[in-house]
Length: 355
Image 1 (spheres, rainbow, N blue to C red):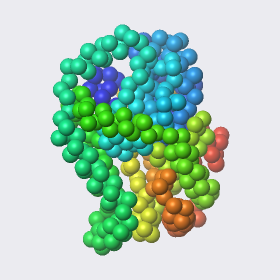
Image 2 (image 1 turned 90 degrees about the horizontal axis):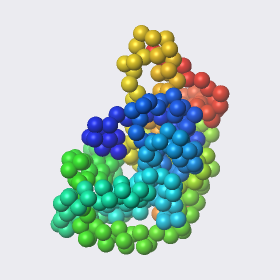
Image 3 (image 1 turned 90 degrees about the vertical axis):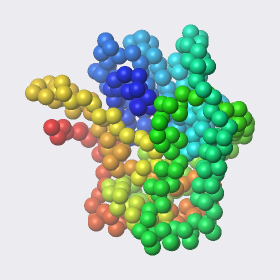
Image 4 (image 1 turned 180 degrees about the horizontal axis):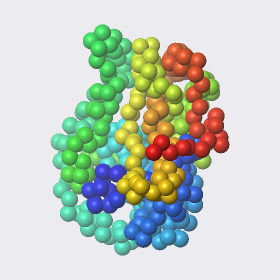
């Protein structure tokens, strides 16, 4: 999303998020707005959905276009974005919960904007059936290998013996647009992709989310005390991914890998938009403002996040293995130190600028 905005010559100003709800910190918004601000973009991360009403009010107050990024939070057509959002965006790429191996949906409030988007849409070339079938074949093969224990276990043994990490290779294979992003985005979907999207959307049931929640909560209740589940207090808790925060994520991931559990550090392309610090140099007020509006908690997530392979298809005995491996990995990595995520173990924490 950030890459797309930059391609349109738009400057992105970051707004920090809350670790426990993953909602942007609305109380910081007014201090970041200028006369050049044209839109407010909010994203529901990791399947968690927060209350949109404060952002609807803020967008109306400041006459901003409200864009709601729901790419990671689709859970059925009973939740298709806030009705007052100007645009709500959904994605069905290869790593999404209800994947169609591509495609997306945009829900547009204003008919004039819709017609302009439609005009641009019809100028794009149409994706060929062959290109889409190649994607389906590639991703299907990857998923088949991942979900086949008879293949995965010996493969993992061989790859570990060769010193090759399967995690990074799988993540790279599952990227929707590994290169030429804008060129690939500016295509109309093939009829095969549209049919796949229709089929996948027709099969969405509330049971999918219910089963995912059961498995995720099962793991959450059995995690070590000094491990934090990101977004645990969100208004709606979906589990597209299962991100946790640990003190030494790389070390924990390596230990879990050695114990036969594939935990990932980079399962999504999420990152922090670093604020512009040029205006803060040489000014005490500028430094204080920079420290106040810096996305501290977002940076904390990126620095400490680890994605556990928890999903609805795993049997409970496999979830027990994940919990046991996590317990060992956290204990051996901490060396007796206590991990204190902001706002959980230190609810009154005040971040100090390191400038």
